[in-house]
Image (tube, rainbow, N blue to C red):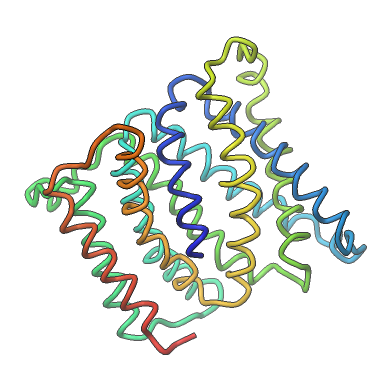
Length: 284
């Protein structure tokens, strides 16, 4: 999950630069197709795809639909939300995942975990609202942040559903089923946008973003999060998302955008404290 948080951070910085240059459904449909091809090759080169993995294909359609909606909403949100504020919205996912973890798997939070995630949510809101306490109390979310928040709800639901619906399949095989289903759904949903896109005329940043999110922020992170979801409570799986704003700030600085205003740094520090509290907990 540490690697997951670093790879996800890159998708915020690159996604914000490509979001207004291509339809979210089009780029994510191609993204899922590429990621499914990569994971399919890995699965076939390894132990193969057991026949039992094909049982109950509705599981993959459900998971693929939920996760593909997350990515479409992410790119739609990044049309107006900054990479740092969007990554802060992402850090609300553990708290939401904890709620879904209880609903789906009856996973309970300790007081320490509840306190840590509440603290992380406060830190995230501080970054999102740039330290404007009055705006925070009024929950004046920008349009992009609000759209992406809906995507994060889908992401949070996905985590406990992986454990609930897995029937002994390996992380790679289960990921492949999810990616194939997501690709099919996105191709159906976004066929108009795909056909209307002038692929040969797209700027280089779109292609860089497409291959990054396909190979690293999809194929690799799908395996990582499914591997972790089968071994950790839903809330702990997503705890590492608290590192994402720090990764994004560092990456944006490397890309020449400079550091954000000092007003957001206390919020980042609070989210890192929340991560430490979660990982120091003795529940497992």
